[in-house]
Image (cartoon, helix red, strand yellow):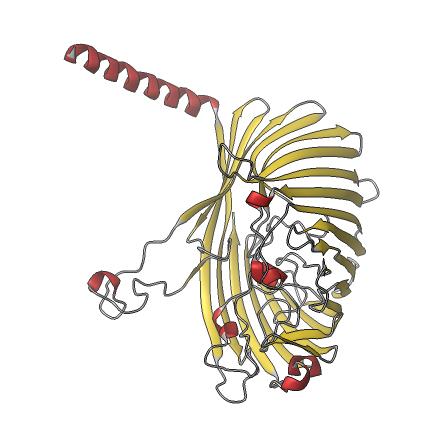
Length: 480
């Protein structure tokens, strides 16, 4: 019996080795990726006159993207985030992520006497198979989701994108000339295997791409559904209420963009509808983004503008959530819409899970943790206008200056459980950026931002502080 077991063991090992050698011989493995490091320093993000706290932190991350050509037409893609953030998707780990996390009990959890740093995580954020056919492609797995300008669906492919949109889906892309149609079914959450408490999504993407005229346009429809048992809409996002019905959201996006040697123009519109399944509260948000840039080849000066709007939820309405929130990767200003500011939730972004704003009748700079979270804010409840100017000194050096002005769409703010009417003036921000392309694969970017808050940050009768703030960010990326 022992001899038989040993023989079976040897046979199994031999088969595994043979399969490994065969797969190595047949499969073609390619690697690409990105290493990124960032340093941030922001003075008084809570506009504090009393205890003015400076927010300073640095992060770094390595993203590896293997591509395996397993057979003719069969491609496996993945993304591995090394030194990944536990909470903020692909932000990266903090410099100084040590063993200590409070009161230590031994050298194993003490920062002051430790001789090594904490071991970091490796997270697999993408993993999917693509089967390419003559005029179609089957996609299965955890797939990145990108559409239009990235206002709603953003895969986080930019050098300094901190977030990525993914879905566990099965999709089929059908190509017809310059058009493609891709329906897909996604499982957002698998609940109890014997119960109906899953969250699912049905998506339809129709897109037109014409390289001859440098134009692209498309529409995207998304329907996300969850039964009452699987509805986990955060209570703080809908007035502290708990789910008592099915979640059923319907999103519709449309975009157009055209890029030539001399200019780029693009816009995206989004409409959100459906129901939250919480006390019969419906969804009715709307968002729009416009981008234009004039960049003639023979000139070193580039002129551009970003403009847009997003509706905001009115806390006074109890049966409707009117807010629309942009993807957090969609950046306009360096400070505004990126970092939490002030002492009240003017942008109405609690649906993102924001926990950094104190909810008390008066500001308490000891408990306001707007100083303790990184790039977590997003565009919502605003109308903004951001013209910019870029000067290319050489093939490696360039400088960009931008002015961003913003106004609230809904002027109601809730502080300490009471609704106040505030000014719509959010203020203005001036940003200066210097970009140095050390090589085609290495970029170093330095940004200086100054923000002068408007009267909206006083939050009505609360008279919160509205002192000016400034920040500095230096970041580098190495792609390969």
